[in-house]
Amino acid sequence: MPTNDQHSQIQEYTKSLDRALLCICKAQLVRKGNIQLQDGAPANAVLLPDFVPVVAKHHIFHIEVSQYFGFAEGRLTTLGYIYQLHTDVSKVDGGMDEIMGFHWHPAVGVKNPHLHVNSDHAALNPLTFRKMHIPTERLALEDFIEFLITQLHVKPEREDWESILAENRKAFIDKRSWPKAGATFSV
Image 1 (cartoon, rainbow, N blue to C red):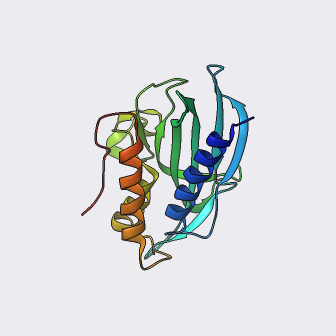
Image 2: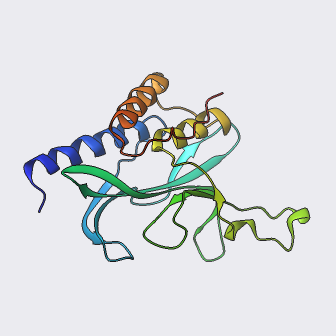
């Protein structure tokens, strides 16, 4: 059971992530408490309950967002994330076809942040990009959302999206426990 201080940190964390998501969709994250990562470490998660549609200039994409967090030395810390972009076309098995996914899950498999890209380009055969782990920096949710808006032309749901993402990103950078600057996709 979280302490009062941990509870307030969780509320601040989820409120910030929800504010960022409201820049592109009406969905809110759902909290899952008391989970175990694959390495057995205790954690919490916030995730979108389903594929959420986001409207772009010529497409409807679907996003999937999960973040895993815990507490170290009394402060909330991110333990991993998955930000995925899917097509609006369902696969035969009923799932969405992933276009790309930004992942960081150091508790299992590849320890470093990475990108998965689904490409069926003939020049890449027999390579399978989908299974490759293309290295990236750690990526804030705000960076993923800005990438969707500026590069994939996802329609912002708010006119003040830039200031919201900038405020959230600044708060995130001020509180993060790792030193490197995150990747950004600003134009």
